[in-house]
Length: 386
Image (cartoon, rainbow, N blue to C red; front, side):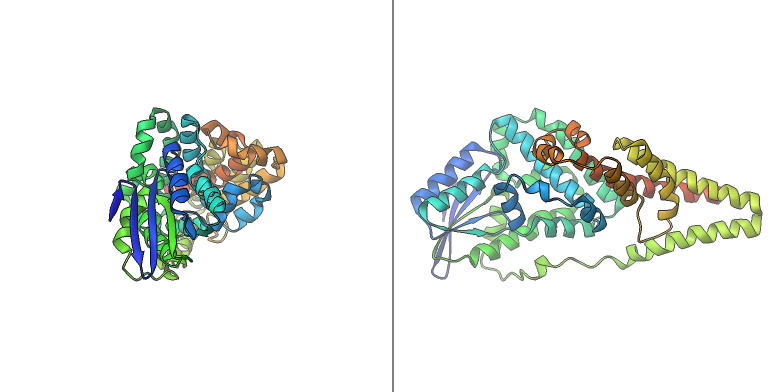
């Protein structure tokens, strides 16, 4: 039965669940959460957090444990950068309204402790969610997503308090990615629909007979829809395999480029072959260097990106951005103050480029994007050399 616009009561077996839909940056939502938990005094409080996000919210010095070399080596630079940008979006809204992002989750945790309720983390690990989304996106889609995230910074300034309250009708991720989500239904599927299912399963299996579940209001309709349906939660935690076609292209494009150069030497002569090599080097190196330069990389890092791209673009297991990122770490190793300032710096576009940690992530991502664009520019140029 619908109790209010943002509060519903659901039952399963002998369990009663009070489902609260909130805006992730809203003082009213935080107050509502605390009041409901105090009034209901549940056995368990479910929150829309995973273990890593829970630790991130409750341990302010968590960033000091970040191993950037490991992040780059494990190909997670874009995932971490995306996560930081999403956090920044909420942080900017929260700063505008004078409330900490995720305040309603923190209030729920504190209220649960006050009434002696167990805290149950109900969301899927953010790294799994972003990894699943990443696997479904191609280079162009990833580039558009990055642009969408960056442009969202400027849009925050025009958001008023009334607009934030309207976000109770949507999930914050959905609000941020709404425009691109209309064009990319697979992104919405991973970020919203799959998490609806995951939250449903975790809330249903939470311990206790009286449960308060605090989730973003955009998930409420999905949870209601799937409440009585079976959910294969294990399948939602598995990373989909890399596409065979993409894997084929990673080897086929370098093989095609090498074959094209060899053909140039044997059919058109040394001059043509040399021009083809020069075109490949200039195109891939220049675009990779531009990507590093846009990231405000060290001059030697830019030169490294230029030099590495023609080689790494021919090797499917190495990327120019990784090489550039490692060089930048060596030349401008992040200090403790960079980790300490990270929560503040991600609140602005300038901060992303100023902080050594996020700048390194930008270097990795933008250099890789530049090198990839260089490949598509280089191949037609090489073809014209015949």
